[in-house]
Length: 66
Image 1 (cartoon, rainbow, N blue to C red):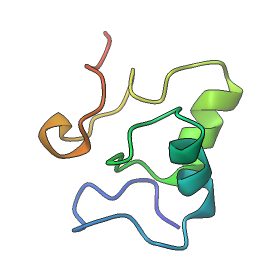
Image 2: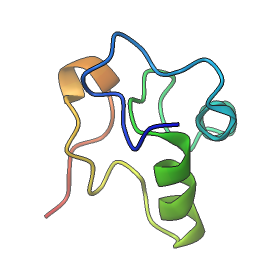
Image 3: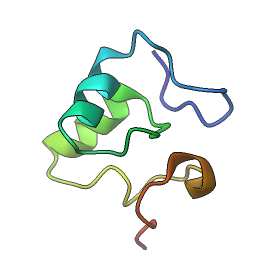
Image 4: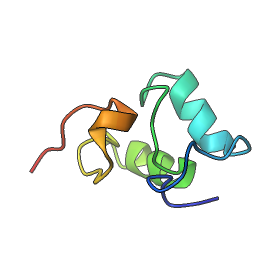
């Protein structure tokens, strides 16, 4: 698994944690963060998009917060 998939065409299909986060609505279906990263943010009570440096044009996530 990777921390993110920003430089990949798409996330790894076997990233189960990312799939679960997408299915549960924590991140958009087009999210490019790695599942472990997403789950760590969720477990800390934070929105994974808030600190993400990913390309919003590809991931369609909410805007980064300062």
